Image (tube, rainbow, N blue to C red; front, side, top):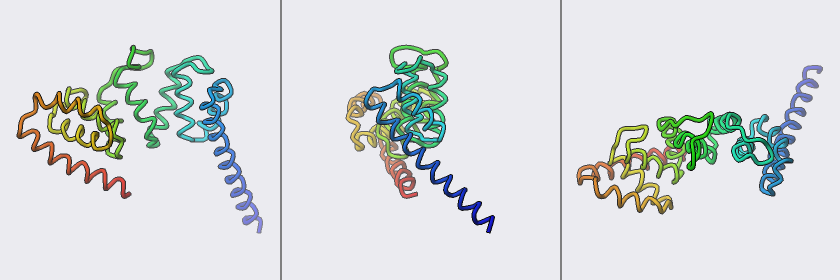
Length: 206
């Protein structure tokens, strides 16, 4: 009897904890969307520590931009890495960009190092889950040999898939690629398109 009561108490505590975490996460996003950053930091910190990946992402964004808090790239890396490791697709692109540029598109930033291979690995995770922006970046990296060996067939395949997914910038990259790709490489690219699509379909079905 005592065991049953103890189990009920544990279950009630778990339900309360999950409900509280859900409310914190919801409030975090509301405050962030309303640009109430000073209030959002504390709420998002609570939700992030409870494992909410959206809150971890938002908290990282605030520390990245210095919104409501002093900018700190170490904290950005901590929360974005945690969210990315839990397969949160929106943050994977943000984190990959940090590694791709060694900071942001405008400048190198402290506590980041340019690491094409790391960027490639992160983008690959979301690319095979159907994220068109990531598919495009994989194509770019194969085109320019960034983090991987230059491979026009792979580049062609990923650009085509990204374009089909609605990423229009892939058109310009395909035009650039057309100047250097051979007929055989393009044929191999078509083969890879089918293989990659099958892989994406299998992952989507799981």
